[in-house]
Amino acid sequence: MAQAEHTPPEGAAADWTIPQDWDRYTPQEHALWDHLFARQAAMLPGRVVPEFMAGLDILRMTRPGIPDFAELSERLMKATGWQVVAVPGLVPDHVFFDHLANRRFVAGRFIRTPEQIDYLEEPDVFHDVFGHVPLLAHPAFADYMQAYGEGGLRAGGLGAIERLARLYWYTVEFGLIRQEDGGLRLYGAGIVSSYGESIFALDDPSPNRLGFDLRRLMRTRYRIDDYQQTYFVIDSFEDLLRQTVETDFAPIYAELGQEADFDTATVVAEDRIYNCGTQAYARAKEGLT
Ligand code: HBI
Ligand code: FE
Image 1 (cartoon, rainbow, N blue to C red):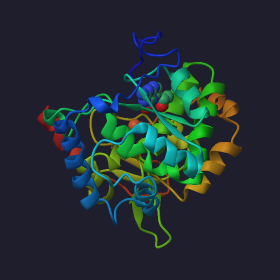
Image 2: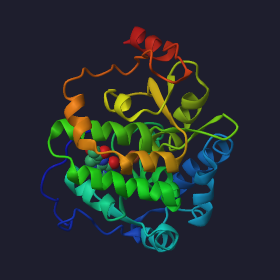
Image 3: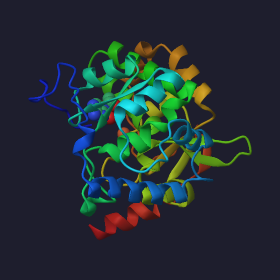
């Protein structure tokens, strides 16, 4: 992920937080949130994990307008002890990990422009708050996010951070989850905040859908410029939390240091395959460029 500057910008605190200045949002900005919200809320039931919809409800996020982080934090604090704080954009890894380890989720306060409705490079308030915050009301997911931050604070060196970033990417941002009936649902924030990927990740024959395996996933590169070519499917948030808390990452980093990375579309014999992707989407795109 892009590396932010190492000192907080002017107006930001030492921990990189800034006031949300909720009063400064314009009616147009609130309307854009409402538009994005309505589009996702109409499509997600039946596709997203039910705990996500429950989170929207618990946190009263179904009310119109860009949420006020102070109010949101109050509800979230009651549910799982998390808070939402505003930051100017991407923050350095150690700052990011420190906030998560202390149950503070850092969110962008700006909202995309109408021209950027379906694609933007830096996380805005819709991605960060609509995408990430509802599941923070779920106890096991909330604990997983803290454990991830703690793992980040312990991870020394770039190789380890890169591996951990992959874990975040393929779970928190682009994760799928299996339901009791065997069906798959979305939970990753990068998917659920994107209209196109909410359909693609679940229904398109193009991408691989593979059972979650920590070591395997940590060897897998990812794409930041387009839909994923591989999604990993967890069995439950409790299982994801347990694996993260019970695993000693240091020997894994050491062991993986010797092994080659997997490409974004690779499937190997040991994979638990839900769908072996055709990669037709990625190929068509390559043909066009
Ligand atoms: N900063 N604001 C913000 N949001 C992120 O998701 C984020 C970040 N800094 C670093 C980072 N993510 C990643 O590099 C970590 O997953 C390792
Ligand atoms: Fe995100």
